[in-house]
Image (cartoon, rainbow, N blue to C red; front, side):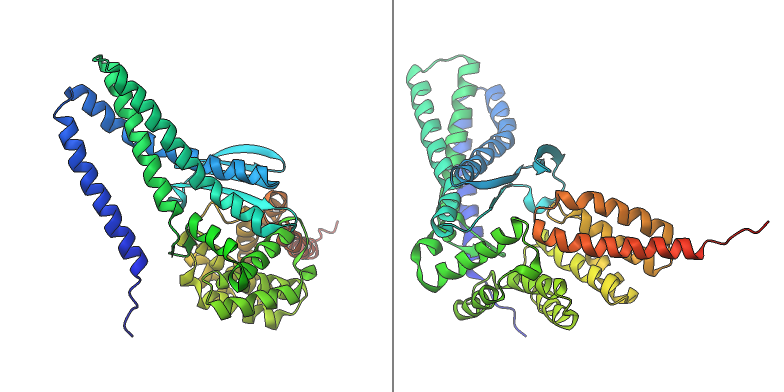
Length: 384
């Protein structure tokens, strides 16, 4: 079967290449007019400058999220990651290359006026980049007007010019409406939400489902009618985000103990795994490994999916630990399983999705109880 060519990634690559080429040409011309030490210093500053403009862009999302009363949960810039766990902010090193640019996670905690609120949240990043670019351009104009010949002022002026340029590039890239690689640009999200109709309705339903679960409503209590409406709309408009609905259907069926339907939805989720970005795709493999280890007691299948899992900052530790524990239990490694189940229980309160966390807690507790019962009944009694 001939692989379908996706024009958006190609166009973005060509645009990126063009920007890089002309930027390099302009940089070489400027380099000829400045001292070598200044040029080398500016080269060194390019990478931290990139992370700074990304930080400002993501800060725009965060501020917009707080403004519309979303729960600000995660802030990622390059190798730096801050995450709110149990109400406390914690710093971690971001080891996931798929989020090495930047990301902010803000979750709606209730469904009032979600369409406009999420549109404002999505617009916050590009707006912050635009404002940053204008501010840096203004500072550059002032510094140029002062025209100081000192090395420090030359470095400062050049650095501000880099920040203004990068902010402008980030604004253009994120404001343009496009969808590629399982992700939508901020501009595409804003456009979909303000367009109305089936597209906006699907987006709102998906957000409402996320908000409901994030607020701690367990899967068995989710609205099946809204899930089915969202899936119908997703098929009607061929929404790329359709794949995530199978995740919600899977957890609803699992929490209502409809295991055959849960496996059916899990298989749909697995079939469309390629539509999920690599960093998040790890969640599909770990969900499948957990299902076949804990529910089906199928060690071969569970191991198959476990081996496809790659560590990711987006995957709850509790689910990973619970899956590893279930695999140990199937292999007869009871002590190791017990230890991992206990660790999983301590990690469940830190999960972003508190609705799914409630369901997972019941399952891990059930497995932990069964493991402890096995240990106690299999311990030999020494008679005098």
